[in-house]
Image (cartoon, rainbow, N blue to C red; front, side, top):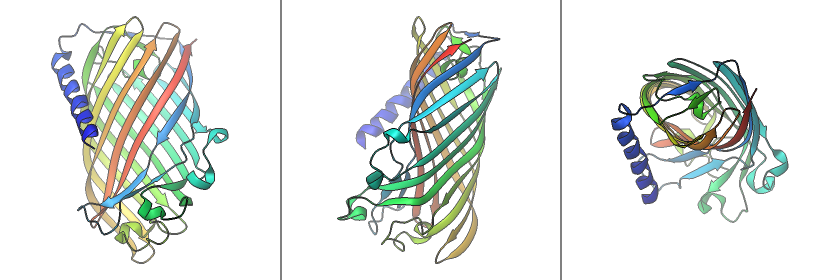
Length: 324
């Protein structure tokens, strides 16, 4: 945990340094009009459902549900200011379903970037989880799998770049521009999203149905959040077509929580919630070919009484693309 804290401090400290020097950077972005960009790649998504006591109570152990860590394969197509990306689970290379569950996965993204504005639509569905930790939950059993547990994510994010001529989001993503010189930009962010959870039983593992209060007793739930915030991004051109990308955003807003529990009935309430996103990546962007390895981390949470459910998404991407 200390190492993770130090890594976060370094990451945000570096962004502050780059932001302070971004205005002096002789940076520019080269647009690539009239070209179709096609990219194929693999994704290793990790979107666990982490349940723990918000007050640090040792009444019940914290644990995580995780998907089967099988790679996902996808394809993206972009032209001018719009594009999409679609990926599915690679079931041929998934780990033992008896231990890790059999995760069904769907991911569709539609995006548009024009000038200072960017819009991302996302839709993700998962079905099939396993309990990753700790031994207090799994006990003597080799695994606790939940083929009935489902989660879904759908929403729209809107970005506004203050200096799109200095830092391009698409240059490090869909390949419709090239970052020719290092530069950065502040950005504003707004988003509307919905997260859903459902199961045939309850959210808590078998034998722990009443140990996590109303949250662990959930059968179906919808969490809708409207958030506003901002952040900073910087593209460091290392040499030639190679670059390093760093960005982070923080947002806050109202969240509507509506859920049905087995023992407590249906509840509808409003909360105030936060959201944080960080991204880093190393890639290349030439006149015809481009590619990257990147990591995107996104976190949101909900709290019922003194128990929290954290949605901590960490997705690793590796792709290569070509422009026609």
